[in-house]
Amino acid sequence: MAMEEEFGIEISAAAAEQMGTPRDVIEWLVTAQERGELFRPPPPRKTGWFVTNHARSPDPAVVRPKLSRDEIAGAVRRIVLEQLAIHPDQYREDGRFVEDFGVD
Image (cartoon, rainbow, N blue to C red; front, side, top):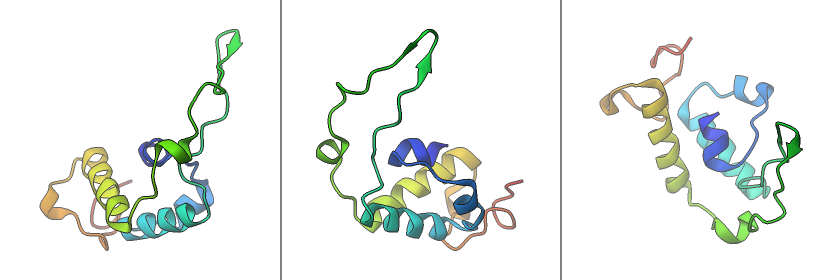
């Protein structure tokens, strides 16, 4: 979920199952950005008895410039370190989430 929030995209369960390393996530995000799928506004979410209005939100394409692969990789690294609570020395783009980082 942290990746989805950071990059403004929904990652399907099928796509997530194919992402075994941070490199897989990075490459998927780079490709999604090339397709114009990053930073889309979320769909309206029902909160209580009303639906929030995203019409007043600025166009995310204007607010968020295109990111380089290095910027995407840096954000993925930060999120992996935060979410998995691993030491920065353990992080590798080719590290496997389950086998190397201990994700269940």
